[in-house]
Image (cartoon, rainbow, N blue to C red; front, top):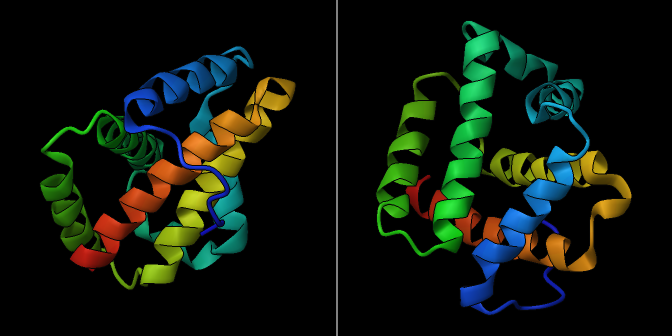
Length: 142
């Protein structure tokens, strides 16, 4: 995972993430195909783990977004949900811990690319901070 350069106050994280998603939405593009194009280009072996990819890929992007937004809002259910998701992923095959970190980095890179010039250093810092927290939960569950 990329290093954090700035710590954002917890009460601002959700607002910043929301603002960044508006910047991404202005591109008028679905996040899912852009994200998975990157992921599968680096890990073609993972593609076979997605049954009904038109459904499961979109569901995964939604789970990532929902978990990160809820984590930034300090929702209490996130830890249990992530624990359950990590256990569920074991049923699909080998998904080593470093791959989760790479996946989260790719997710942020996808958002930044789609937002283009609308992406800011503050957006980057907020997503990096929140994904680092999510990765900690994933590592504990792994």
